[in-house]
Length: 247
Image (cartoon, rainbow, N blue to C red; front, side, top):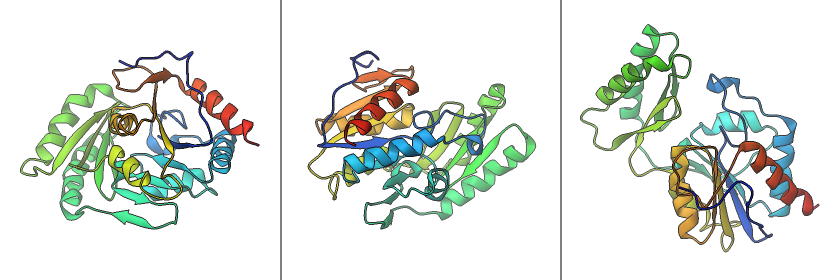
């Protein structure tokens, strides 16, 4: 469990580097992934943080890079997309380290199930496949059986069981490794990492931030190794106060 309460979010300084999850953290989770709404307050917050921290702000998300860029346009931030498998550094260079062919076959197998059940939504990315069952939670077990069947004989693949979503990804690629990679580069190097997220996939990045002597903040309920806990509104208000203080 986290060790702090929502009333004790920490003070931070200009030596910080922010790493922020997208769904459930920057934006509210929507019934379907494409229906999330990015309000002007989100873009204003990211601009303010980036300006105060000389660009040391990165998005860490399970979303594809192009999707995040579309939602956050006109901003183009450093990002660890697809749980870090696709990473764009502060210079704009994109790094990829995975084989896509086997993942494509998993997606094709799960597409059959998604076509049979219209309430299921299959999200296919470069390095992973996510099967969402938020529209009909009772399909969760059927979805789970299909996902594990699709990865049989593929020891490098594993399943992340998130909030009404099962995501197949490549072993050894996660948000924690993405955070560590950013921390070795300008403008993040030498700063104190602050990771904010809401889901199980963020635990890897919480661990990396903790190990580096940084700060980890969990949004919402659930078991976590994060040091602090709050809700989305609490995070937004806290981060906005920090960004505004630097203007």
